[in-house]
Image (tube, rainbow, N blue to C red; front, side, top):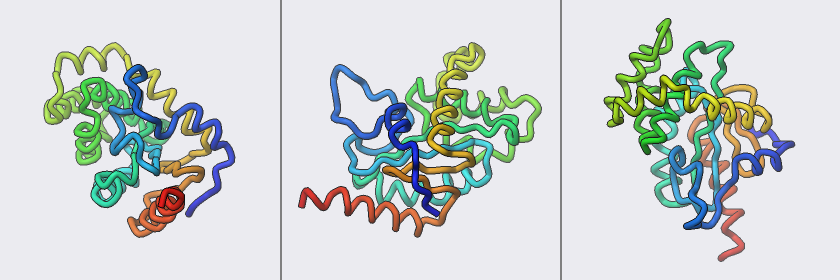
Amino acid sequence: MMRTLLVAAAWLVTLPGPRPVSRQAPDPLAARAKGRVDAPVTVYEMSDFQCPYCREFALATMPVLEREYIQPGKVRFVYVNLPLTSMHKNAAAAAEVALCAARQQRFWPMHDLLFRHQDQWAPLASPRAFLLALGDSAGLDRARLTRCVASGATAADVRADAGRARRSGATSTPTFYIEGALLEGAAPVSVFRAVLDSIYQSKTAAGR
């Protein structure tokens, strides 16, 4: 279900959409974005690594969207952390590890591994050792990852992400901000196709 976004301006200020490539201003979202920076449509996914519905989207729907929309240059997709810590005790720790991986340009391999192994790390009393081991599988420099996690270097970034997501109106995960509206829940791929096709056609019609 699409819900009209009432605070779109605030979201766009805090998480900018596509912009021309600039040699002087590197894209701060590039490490956790997929697709061309100048794609006509930008999707922000507000997600929790411990959320089972987010896992469903990441493993079943995202590969289809990547093949049909991201790789052809129609959509840019950006991951935004919204750990629901009141329900998911290890979600923030997973998000911090993922952003540490992003500092080594390995966010997406870690993203995929976190969701694939969610059932293994989610119930752990202390998940750090398991999460660091996933970093090995993601091709990360273990020493750098360990230092980043131990220092809490990305904790503030995770909190900032969550704050932006909540200000946009997101209260559950996954929630998708798509060009002025919110799509809530792990909708089937047919729903994403209908929404993305409509927006893409609308935004590109003027150039035809």
